[in-house]
Amino acid sequence: MQAEYFTRDLLRAARFAAEKHRDQRRKGIEASPYINHPIEVAELISRVGEVDDLPTLIAAILHDTVEDTETTFEDIENAFGADVCSLVAEMTDDKSLPKAERKRLQVEHSSQVSHRAKLIKIADKTCNVKDVANSPPPDWSVKRRTEYLDWASRVVDGCRGVNEKLERHFDETLARAREVL
Ligand code: NDP
Ligand code: ZN
Image (cartoon, rainbow, N blue to C red):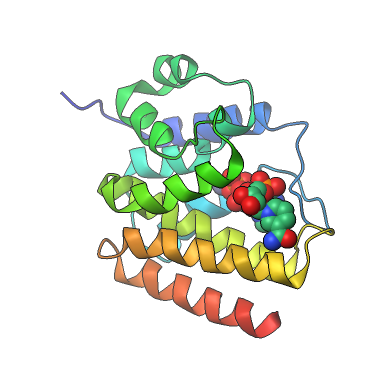
């Protein structure tokens, strides 16, 4: 049986992620607080994708906590239940693998993840493509930024067919990013 989620769980997730990411900054020139990113991802799914499914929005807020902080899947399952935990797992790379292999696996697996995880992946890549265009890590060459856009586009291609508005918004964001570069 699927657990029921409420608005208070979404706010609890925001508080949880803010606490977990509290000492982290994005890699971009502005080094903005890390939490801005998962909030942006969730807000995009809600506003552009017109998705109001709470487990999706909660998992979007939490999507980088296991990958980028000491949070475990057990922590997520205990605090937010199995539905959200399985979505966060679908968003989490295996950090024991080399980075190039992780990137290859994201492309290979993106068509096989759940419908909800595809929504989060499209929004995540949209935000990162925008960041690579507007606030890139300072040491990234144009070549590396271009390679990132190409890779993100391949990951999103595997996720297509779940939300026309989000997919169109990704395409527009990618086109603008290519112009900036
Ligand atoms: P990544 O390419 O994994 O870094 C991008 C990730 O960092 C994003 O997916 C995003 O993930 C996060 N992020 C945080 N802040 C920003 C921001 N401002 N803009 C964009 N992304 C941000 O970098 P790695 O350092 O992990 O590099 C690994 C890969 O890069 C290797 O596979 C290697 O092959 C390649 N590489 C290429 C080089 C080149 O010159 N072409 C040079 C060196 C490496 P999230 O949403 O999870 O936070
Ligand atoms: Zn992310």
